[in-house]
Image (cartoon, rainbow, N blue to C red; front, side):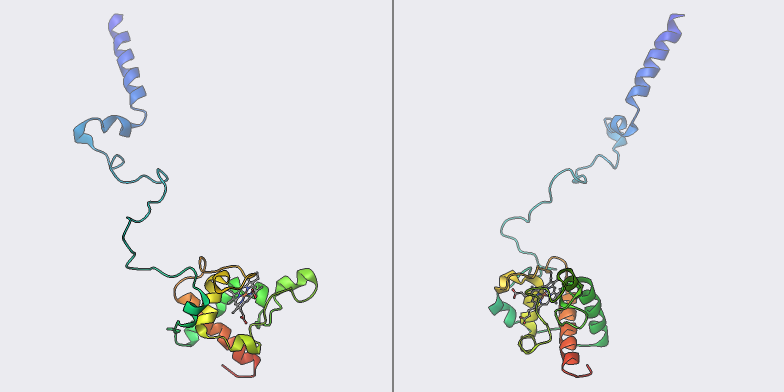
Length: 182
Ligand code: HEC
């Protein structure tokens, strides 16, 4: 009578311990599990800042530029059909709502005030046409850094070649506005 009870107690204790086998077996050296390793666990600590004194060697792109620096940039993207198509998509996603399908500053947002929305620029007028590609680039990534105020910044949303494809597309809208074909 006594034996079976003792056995039962031991089994119950083991069963309780073994609810999550990972937590039991890793105490035994031979059973090192993949879960218990020195890597950083998801959500276990905030993203690590870069080591002081180091600089990124790949993938760094500016999030904002002062006007003088933006003006000096040279557009590295040729105005190919591929670039324009991509630029059109980026424009429709982020810019059209304010600046309008043809860039006239009359996007759907204007309907909310029953007329041209105050402050939104026509991207195809003489002033905008006279801007350099670098200036347009600077406006896209961070208008405030360029000394302009109302337009939101897009440098955190539009990356890499998309930025220049968008510049190319704005140029195309400008040419269309003055009657050019491309
Ligand atoms: C929320 C509305 C809004 C959106 C969305 C928006 N803009 Fe603007 N944009 C403005 C306003 C307002 C100004 C005028 C800013 C100022 O003068 O301070 C402006 C100005 C500009 C200018 C300067 C024109 C000039 O003659 O100097 C450019 C270029 C421009 N926007 C391009 C874009 C592009 C490209 C996008 C898409 C990434 C975009 N904008 C998205 C509101 C917007």
